[in-house]
Image 1 (cartoon, rainbow, N blue to C red):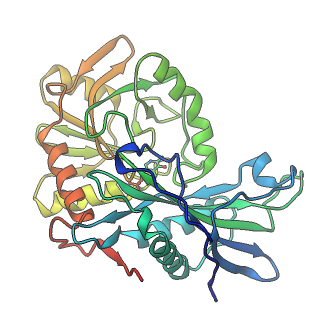
Image 2: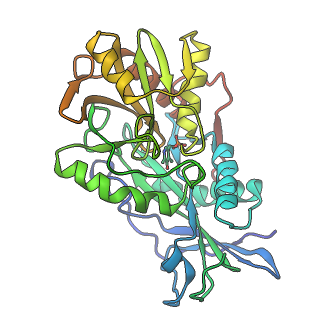
Length: 356
Ligand SMILES: *Cc1c(COP(=O)(O)O)cnc(C)c1O
């Protein structure tokens, strides 16, 4: 398929690295592509960033048939730009697509289009520590129709946003609120897909947590309200008695690429790690007997996010000494060193973007 390119006439001005937050400003260009049953995916183009005009009856606005991905372009010390395991994002994009009846895409073609888009907007890749260019591919249902069925037409788009640390706290511990009242997703549902609906389902609980002074919600399973699933936009890890524990991908948890990278590093370092069901009671018991050493979240946006406080029912526990634990620190340093080209990449995780 051909990729048409139309450049902006007057490039926008990127704010200074120190002014960056998360996901508030967008680069000069975007990638667009359309799907119809007759032509399949077609009309691939990079063009000036701009609105998508929609009929008010457009299906995504009513029934939420939408998926997305999140990855980053990092500026390495030598000025080079690189991506981190992007082929994983493309594969997950197609997995998510299948969950909500969206037609699959050509993963290689989309990844090449993303590389081209980043190359064109290369000046938008910031260089201050912990900054990067966040890449958001998305597919939305475009039929104008109020009946309930999968849409026949779709729009795929990719936008770019220069970002700083995801949490205001940066690489500092966050406070987590555990709930057995609200649930995000249930086995057999959409939890394994990166889809808009999962986020809609998480908003109310997250607001309740925020009002109580917490950064994020730790979700428990929707059936027994005992098994730990994940936290906000992140997967979760526990360090108990020197062992790394994370919930298994049982059908209601997003298969994070950062999660996979942590597990692979643990294997590489001979740290005992297990993917197994873990209940909130086990965590509270480990805290009481002194074997709970660390809790941290993992995800592209925040990389590794240490958890300092955990609130469950009437108890608030301080994890470790309330600071950044050694395991979280080691994973954070190693993963970011690889992402920013400061360290060797023995795993072949880094993919360069060729700039013009
Ligand atoms: C994207 C996401 C994650 C993290 O996945 P990464 O590939 O590590 O960025 C975790 N949980 C949910 C619900 C997500 O949407």
